[in-house]
Amino acid sequence: MKTYQLYHGEFLQAENKLRHAENQRLKVEQQQNAGGVVGAKTAISRRFRNYEKLSEKVYSEGVCEELACD
Image (cartoon, rainbow, N blue to C red):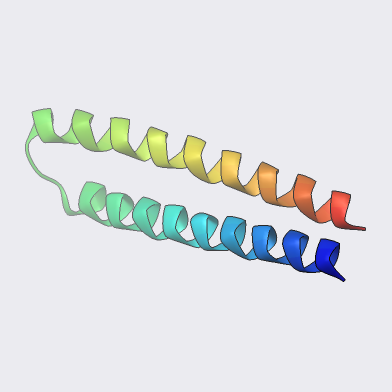
């Protein structure tokens, strides 16, 4: 039972990180769609790419943990 609880806790943490990364990505997308200064646009694009990488990383870790749990 302890093993299940540990994996379940790690899964919930990964899920929360993924939600947070997705929310940040949506905020960046909204800022990008709103327009703005060209210099700010490159910074937003960089942040957007970083959030994309983070969400992919968190998602892959969560999937791997979920598969290991079975």
